[in-house]
Picture (cartoon, rainbow, N blue to C red):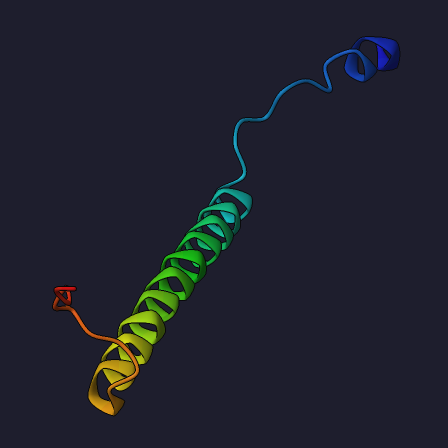
Length: 64
């Protein structure tokens, strides 16, 4: 009878704690990447407008 119980160690279903942790981890990684992308975009825009204000670049095409 004990040999029969050993063979029944099967699938118990999903672990709710593991699923929550996987979801939180994936969400934090995706959110961090998204935030990093927007910080980089904001930095590029700030550099552009700083250079425009200093007169290093122009958005008007000069005629020759």
